[in-house]
Length: 244
Image 1 (cartoon, one colour):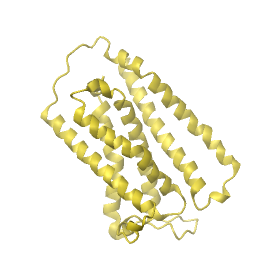
Image 2: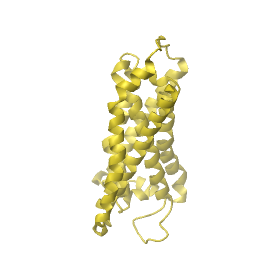
Image 3: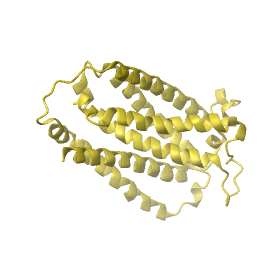
């Protein structure tokens, strides 16, 4: 029963992260993008659709203490020291978080069209970043305001968790939220950048050039796949007890 409770809790957090990210990009991108003047009041019907996952997410966070007590009740076994492989995995994830943090800042500078990036080579690799629909802008700003703080927190947790594990009881929950948001974000972002829209003529919407396809798709796939492995590393099996 406890295993089922944990599974559905983490699955619901994954779903919340995915839904909240998709609705922020949909509504925000439509509002600030090239076609924002064509938005009808019916667009506001998306707001309740976003509020339900948000309310559910807050309820899950408020119930975290009860959930933790249920999970550790009757399990008083001392925690075993991490194996050498576990330490190597943690080092690998720290390297990834540093890369993702730097890469996010790099793309933020490009999507905001800062003067220092005016003639950057990266626009040739990811031309979709210049698209005026507003969706890539909002998605990368989500990386700026939400993903980057998570990357920093994850690095901090991976380094100091062995010393102060009870300080990071919140981390498994946010890891699942991040995994859901990252999966949805990169799925929609990557597939939007692979092809030109067949029904809409838009000069700012360019597909990834074939010469740069492998590098661009590889980098974006990395941002989608590694968070799923990290979520399994933190929450799979009984690993989340390292934080309780």
